[in-house]
Image 1 (cartoon, helix red, strand yellow):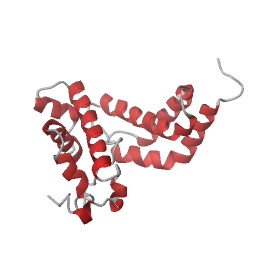
Image 2: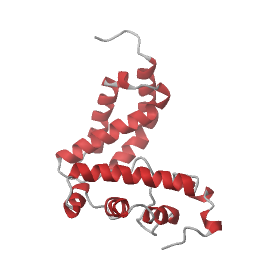
Image 3: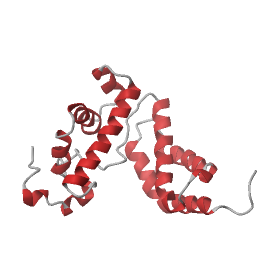
Length: 186
C-alpha cells in the first residue's frame, strides 16, 4: 500500500541515488567481472533501494545505506556467476596496482594482527583470491572464511585507528607514523 507523501527516509534515498549515481556506477565497474553489466546491476540496486527505502533507520545515513544496497546487488550477481570477490568496504586498503603500495601503515599494522587475520586479508585483499578459494585452502567453510575476513577487517580498522589515528588510506598523510618511524616499508 503506497502512501501519497514519501517519508523523509524515502526522500533521502532518492537524493542519495541521484547524487551518487556516477560514483556508484564507477564502483560497480571496478568490482564487476567480465560478463557483468554494470548499468544493469546499478539499475537493479536502485530499484531495490527505492522499494526498501522504508528500512532506512537514519535518513542522514541514506547515502551509506544506498552504497551497501549497490554492493549487495553486485555480490548477488557475482555469486550467480560463481565468481565471488568481496569488496573492501569497511576500510580502504592501499592499492597494490601500478607503482605499488600507497600506505605502508596499513600493511605494517595488518602484519601485526592475529596470524589467521593477517593471512586472510593478504590472500583476499592483496592477492585478490576469491574467498571460496581461500576457504578451501584453509580447510574452512566459505561462511567461516567470510566471518574471519569481516573480523580481520574490523581488527585492522581498530588497530589503525588506535595506532595511526585514522582508518583511511586517503588520510595516511595525516598519520604520524612516518615521523615516528614505526611503520617502515617492508
